[in-house]
Image (tube, one colour):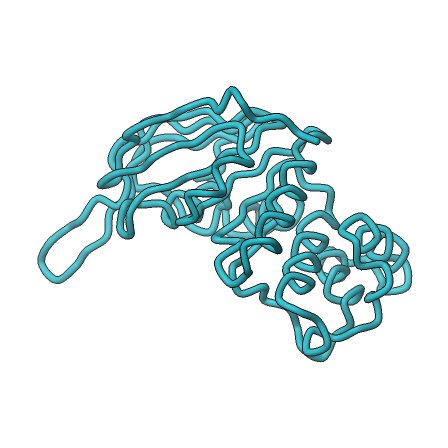
Amino acid sequence: MLELTRVVKQYRIGEERVRALDEVSMRIEAGQFTSIIGPSGSGKSTLLHLLGALDSPDEGSIRFRGTEIGDLGEDAQAAFRLQQVGFVFQFFNLLPTLSAWENVAVPKLLDGTGLRKAKPRALELLELVGLGDRAKHRPAELSGGQMQRVAVARALIMDPPLILADEPTGNLDSKTGAAILELLGEITAQGNSVVMVTHDMGAVDHCDRVITLQDGRIGADDIVAARVRA
């Protein structure tokens, strides 16, 4: 579904140019839960930004279903991010004045769908993540785990084939984090692909594949054969 070929991303620090990603090549398959791990500065967040068209590579190719996303114009990249990618962030990024279901519906509003029309699907997704009884609650009335579940529901509202999760368990206790990881794993059973950046080594138990980055290069790429979904 998603293919990277010899991708390079560089940043200038003073007079020096640093390669955050150094000729990275990989394929992300449909229905796969992939974890990207590695030390700070290894290129994990840079890679996630490139996969979500939040940035463009300096060299190499990133193709999504045959389309070169690095060559898309700004409007086309914005449409790609809205319609093809769901983002789940460590700090939730919920709008404090909106209810849970309204936060879930925000991408639909950005796509031109009215709030009333978007509401049934938003409520359905909150039921899916176990928050049907919290639909009218604002973020301040929710726990950290509940806010992250709202964020996952929001990431699914456009039915995107690709979900990108940046440290989704970073602010959660171990039990709640495990529940979020299980939920992300269940999403891949529907054919979606999930790519997660994490420092949580326990998270790999919930993944089908673990990619290790080191100094901007792939150090290891392992299929987790023991992964079994409930």
